Amino acid sequence: MPSHRAPLALGALGAVAALVLAAGCTDSAPDVVASRAPTLPTMPTPTSTAVPAAAPGVSKVEVVATGLRVPWGTAFLPDGSALVTERDSGRVLRVVPGTGRASVTEAGRITEVDGGGEGGLLGIAASPGYAQDQTLFVYYTTREDNRVARWKLGGRPEPIVTGIPISGIHNGGRLAFGPDGYLYATTGDASQRGNSQDLGSLGGKILRMTPEGRPAPGNPFGTLVWSYGHRNVQGIAWDAGGHLWATEFGQNTWDEVNRIEPGKNYGWPVVEGAAGDKRFVDPVAAWHTAEASCSGAGIVGDVLVAACLKGERLWLLPIGADGTLHGSPVAALTGEYGRLRDAHPAPDGSLWVLTSNHDGRGDPGPDDDRILRITLGRV
Image (cartoon, rainbow, N blue to C red):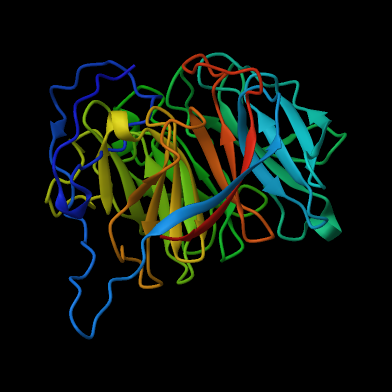
């Protein structure tokens, strides 16, 4: 586990947070510059003609399902049901919302999964043409590697990308189709820092691929690599302007939210946080690790939601279609539901949040793990 430091003062928040996920490790890093948090925008000062925008907040929380074990990823299907992965068991659960609690049944199991450490059955995404092709994509750990596979319920997975580095920690694992129709996958450095800066390695990257696992047209290096210099990205989401955002675990000082651009270098392991170095892209927001350790990311309207493990909260970031922050991040649900793993927009405009209290680092209650349905508002 990483060492955690008390938050520093910053802007209207009064405390700067740094995004270091609980998945961080304790390795010392003499070659890493633990730098500074980016300067976040503050809310406008009221005048006789200007009123500050209302801050985002949580207006309602409902429990959709209980009794899960380390749920990790979510994919909604055209019929309104969802598929949810369990990291350690390799199970894929079908969750059918209804009046009261949802119906939860096992829809399938990936038997090739090796669920040790932070690896296992991780991300899941439904094909954009799922109604016609019934195809899913899963990211999982085997004894040899992390991999991405095509899969149909009841069948065996068909690997399309293999050889992603594995370790007991830092396996990445999020899958999502972008607005461009291509599949994106996040990978970790697999506790080998050199992977992140090595363009020949699939570790410490965000990958962009066709549904067949080939480099997508327009990739900056002609390979699967879309961006690099990442430590361990586990959350990605797109805003209304088509900009890609990502949550990233830091090491001992800063956890990050980054806006991702193709071919750009995000600094790990040379820097952690904002370096002000033109070789690297600085984070848009950063928090101290005890306040964050954010795994999942989802965007509802103009709010980016980061679901945090160690920080046991949601960070709500108001963003614009121009790809910038439009106000200060707001913490919500702090300490109320324990460790929060995923934040996934639902078809009805709500957000499904998965808890992760059975992952070996939490304090599970009798109903854990849970799926929460979050309705956002303005406060």
